[in-house]
Image (cartoon, rainbow, N blue to C red; front, side, top):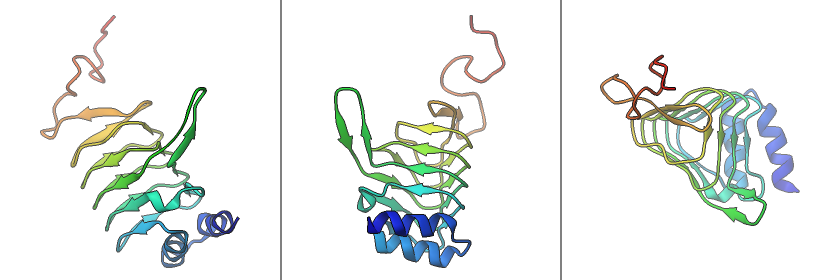
Amino acid sequence: MANYVLMALARLSPSLQVKNWLYRRMGIDVGDHVSVGLEATMDVFFPELISIGADSIVGFDSVILCHEFLADEYRTGPVEIGEGVSIGANVTILPGVEIGDGATVSAHSLVNCDVPAGAFYGGVPARPLDDADGGEPEEAGAFSGQDTR
């Protein structure tokens, strides 16, 4: 109940300092200079499984979950967000995901797998949008505008 109240206050707080203080009271490991957008929601049942590295940004209305109920199972897992990570608005991050330092996740993405350091991921489900050199994704034809049918 206490985590729910703290999360409700954090979701609406325009002050990043107050928001991060509330997250820390819930048990979330929040680094220095972290910016979490309005209406973002962290897992209220397992907040201690979330860590957000210094200088990272979590966009408006994003959701970070450390538990999920599936048809035949219930699972939990830590969510680790590295330093200097940029997460767009309305992103959902599922349990057990690690996002490496300096990675970017585009808006409206569903992150159900690890994101390597420095990578640019997006989509539903999230996948590489380009390689480190700005080229095409590893999957042939993906996001290239080519008809792969």
